[in-house]
Every structure is written in structure tokens, then in C-alpha cells.
Length: 107
Image (cartoon, rainbow, N blue to C red; front, side):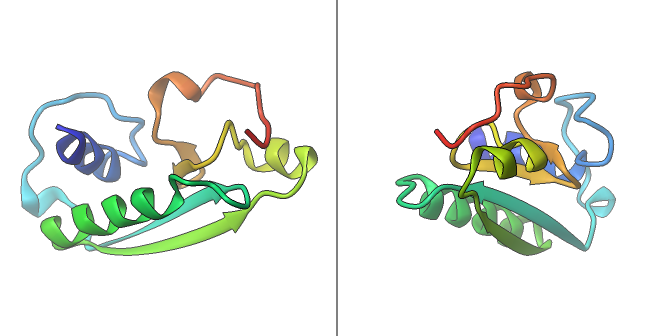
């Protein structure tokens, strides 16, 4: 289920995930840039990166992962980091419930 939802999020990064209907492979982008915001020592960074890469491979999408170390509350606010790790596609958090939040931080 997580892989399927992440695949849909990857596809709909520009469209803010409007639906959970299956996406046809020919509609998937060929490449995508994913930004992962994290804090030093984050135990979930590696599993998150691995899952993003796994889904990309399974879907035949070239995924470039840009890791950004968050080192200050100001940087967290500027980049909209809600916790570690935060995954964004085109600057949009992949967690729909988090998109309207303003509780940025290093945690």
C-alpha cells in the first residue's frame, strides 16, 4: 500500500494528489526530483531514501534525491520542514495533511 500511495504521490506531485485511482504507466514522468529534508542522526532517513528509490525503480522513473540537512529553526521554516525526514516533490510535502501546517522545526 505504501508503495502504491508513494507512486501516486510521485505522479501527482504537480497536481497535489487529487485521486487514489490507479495511474497508467505511460502517464508517469520519466524523471523526478525529490527533496528530503532531514536532521542530523535521523533514523528514518535511509529507509525513506531506500523506499523512494525502490518505487522509482519499480515504476521505471529516474529519481534524483536531493538530501538537505536542516540545521536551524530558520532553515526549517524557510524550507517548510515539519519534521525529519520531510519528503517534498516540487517543493510540496508528500503528506497531504501536512501541507497547510506551519509547525516547522527540527524534530
